[in-house]
Image: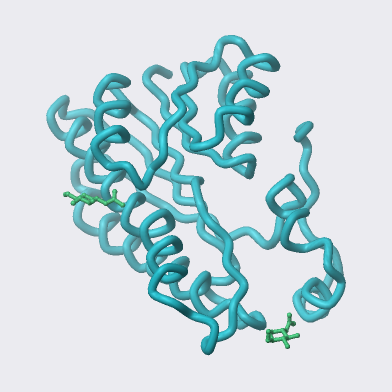
Length: 209
Ligand SMILES: *[C@@H]1O[C@H](CO)[C@@H](O)[C@H](O)[C@H]1NC(C)=O
Ligand SMILES: *[C@@H]1O[C@H](CO)[C@@H](O)[C@H](O)[C@H]1NC(C)=O
């Protein structure tokens, strides 16, 4: 495998990057947090890292184009949000939709352009969330953003399947990464979600965070 690109934010993407590198893929990891990247690089020196804010489209596009050719894209950068409808502000709305939806659409487009130019098959995996499908308390913005990811994924899969480009979304429950712990250590928040899960447990991580 060559030219693999992975986006992460101290999250599920980190585990995916490490596993892909272990499988022999050439991995490029993009993250907004330099410390997370330095930690990843120290653990897996073969992974290339770029410190970039996905909301800065000029910088992001430049980083992606430098990494061409790209065969596999994992869109795993995401921002969590737990607010009631009454707490929604324009700013909160923009942060969630810029990262979870708009950046994802832009990055996907740039990678598909490269695949089409090379007449190459490819695969894109979007890390969506159970919140796209299940009702959870105070998930107003987050659920809406992840449902947008799922719908976008279906639409693009239909248009580019004929070019050998697969695009799928994965909808995990909470995974206890550093990011997961930040939101879900509070039992008041965790209880209603756990009550809906027959195993009464969130997903563990199999990698060091
Ligand atoms: C997405 O791309 C458009 C240009 O096609 C740009 O204007 C916009 O700022 C980008 N947004 C994000 C969040 O990347
Ligand atoms: C949802 O938000 C409201 C208002 O902030 C709060 O009172 C309530 O406890 C929250 N529910 C959960 C499950 O976090």
